[in-house]
Length: 279
Image 1: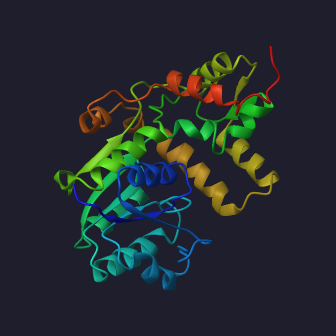
Image 2: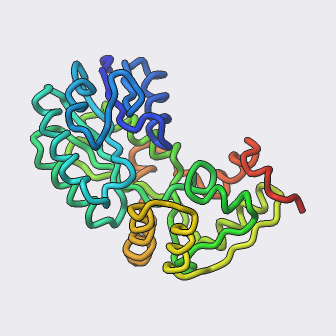
């Protein structure tokens, strides 16, 4: 397989840095871009797109904070137009499983004239170790809405391995790959798994979506984030069609997807959860 020049947008994020590492280890030339890189890339400043795309063959696109937020469609439209002008061969878009707004962005990519693969992901395991719920775990109380939702949490390593393969393998052109974990888990179940793996006491407390949003406001988070999390809980987790295990990871990689228990055991060994009071 030939060496490619690959742009990774969001290259310091949960999946982006893993994809960049995979591709670098495979011998590809990787350009990671963000607001503080050279060249800089800012989703809110379309004038930064050209320099980031220059001389690139392929691109992994992660829109921050989420494809559901206002402005995402315009940004994805502009980026794909500029990518086509710059002569890119292919793009891979990270999308959200069951997000109507994200699917609108998928359509933009699919109709852009570029070769593409869409990767739709369920909620990440790493939300509990690298993302929004880490502080809850460290405080020993995880208070979240939608306690009845059964979520096929997916590991960021698995997502990255899928992206790293399909971005250079053109047999996946035009396909939508849905990445989920191998099992459905409720929030209470995953909190219990984390507690056991880290030998800590962690309590799960079910709350309403409004209570969760009020807590975000009191923490000083911007309205856009409050809206986004409300949307993700109500519209995404509340949709039964999203509470389904899909075996695309095994189909693409030829191995089973990582279980939440395996993720918890691996993560506990890093010490990230050690600030919780020990039993």
